[in-house]
Image (cartoon, rainbow over all chains, first blue to last red; front, side, top):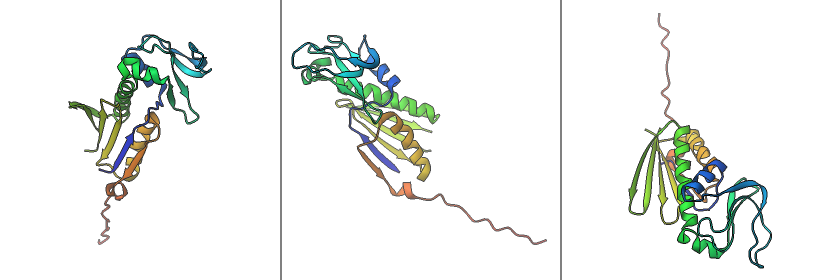
Length: 132
Length: 65
């Protein structure tokens, strides 16, 4: 082994991969743009502007919209209420999105390296080997 | 053959990556391709192999006529 890296943060750097991952996990309606305003359905929800909006009720997010804001470091970070974090996709919205996004990252890395992909699932772990 | 071993925890979506069989600058290039898509890793370790220099066998020219 020559390098070991972990990526535990829920941050998404590639817009196209993020949109594809959102569609894969069931987000059938996605708004994209600059300074999109998230809906305010309850008095405690403050004004929030983001780059991507999954409108309320699209994926079990009963409490409000789910947004993704573009940070100064060029990453898209989720903006969602804690109630929706535990409700959307039965509380699996972020884990499923990360898994779908990361699989796309691996496919893109393999394509850039002109490598081959070998995928296996063992228990709760997806193991993907890229040979190049 | 160089390879990258990725694991994705289905429960959390968290990804880990191990680059194997790649030395020095080429390993850094591979890591850069990944971090361009993932952002900076929380944890990163270089192993001995990362710092290894490729073996170069000196060549001696024999100019005897």
